[in-house]
Image (cartoon, rainbow, N blue to C red; front, side, top):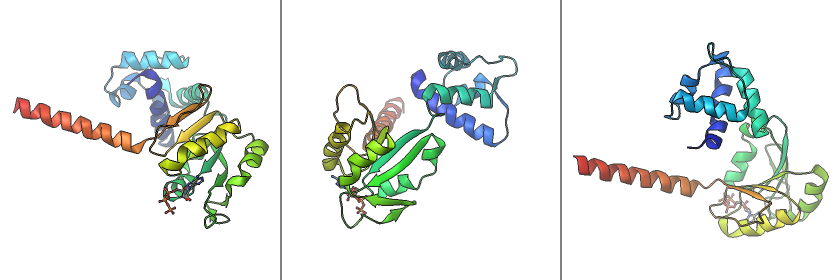
Amino acid sequence: MQTLRRIPYYHQILSDMEQKGEQFVSSKYLAHFFHVDDTQVRKDVSVIGYKGKPKSGYSVSGLKGAIGDFLGINTENTAILIGVGRLGSALIEYPGLSEYGLKLVAVFDSNPVKQDKVIGGFTVLPMESLKRVIQSFDVGIAIITVPKNAAQGVCDLVVEQNIKAIWNFAPTQLSASADVTVRNENMAVGLALLSHYLKKRKAESAIFA
Ligand code: ATP
């Protein structure tokens, strides 16, 4: 796993430690979560640009703050969500989004049956309101939780409105112009990789049995 992929996990670990009232953390402790050595953790921390005290360890809140600045999650990002099905509803009600600096401002669905329903304090809006809302709230991120056959169309719609960051939960690879960042949260791919890994492990243990 590369540095950039470890950094958000450091943030999560430090948040948990902060909640437990712990003040210092060693690079060795952070390293054990990732099967790397403490030298690697110190390298990662230097990428973030945080100066720690090697003897007593890093300050939990100091390092967490520095990672937050590095990732840009200490400043609030405004987001909308499109597709208020089961996954979309769960995300709307998930308090973790705001903990990571994501401020949901509106949710949309093309199904008239869903419109006007209130989920997690949000009235579900029709797609026709998309343009108005994106412009008036200066929305930065679009979260896509529509089925896969609708996802590219929704992606195109939000990109047309100048959205530059997309968090896609539909199990499909979205294409957008190079200035748009698309983060695919593909559970199917995650599961396929795990299953491939398990299969490989089984084959290896059969060889060495
Ligand atoms: P439910 O059965 O309650 O709709 P679900 O999670 O099984 O839940 P999905 O078929 O995954 O539903 O669809 C997710 C949501 O996306 C639905 O609420 C659906 O109305 C909405 N949706 C589908 N196509 C579009 C679209 N093009 N634009 C906006 N929303 C859409």
